[in-house]
Image 1 (spheres, helix red, strand yellow):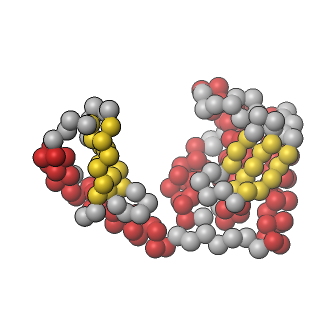
Image 2 (cartoon, helix red, strand yellow; image 1 turned 90 degrees about the vertical axis):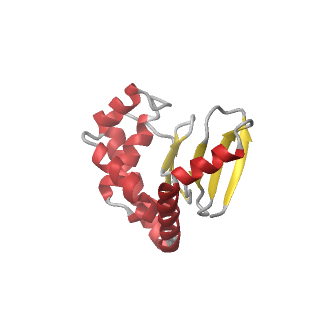
Image 3 (cartoon, one colour; image 1 turned 90 degrees about the horizontal axis):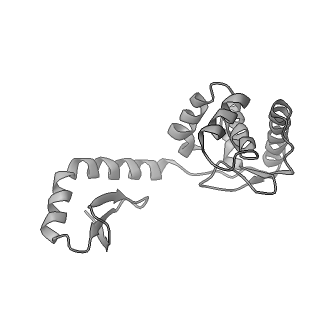
Amino acid sequence: MLHQIIRSRRRSIALEITPQATLVVRAPHRAPHAMIAEMIARHKGWIERQIERVTRYSLRVTHVPLTPAERESFLHIVRERVELFSARGGYRPQRVRLSRAAKRWGSCSRQGSLNFSDRLARAPLSVLDYVVAHELAHLVQPNHSRRFWAEVERLLPGYNTERVWLKERGRSL
């Protein structure tokens, strides 16, 4: 099993599986090598399951970019959904664009520009609605506080189903 040890001023040992299916051990400067080896041995089952999961995931997920026509069509849908939820919440976003972001579903700039990942084109409309509501809520709450989540709930009651769907299945988009 390939692994890397990173020592720092931390107080405990942590195990991490990278997207490349390697083990990273984060340990305090003074942690004995035997203690690190014991930690790896104690968590061997978890490590093997996580490496298997990452390996299986990386073999089956490939993002297929949208064609220019699909992108234009999807941008039209996104703008319609933004208009719908903006009217519901009284928002005035400055700009709506698509991005090719791989790690974010959406973003909201301080100037009120909303960006949405084109990968959302492969998601159900209800999931797109959740991301739209999420980003619009950032226009009034630039954080993830209780007030922010209350604003998302006001725009899209019962949003948590879509949030969970995105967490569980979003990587496959």
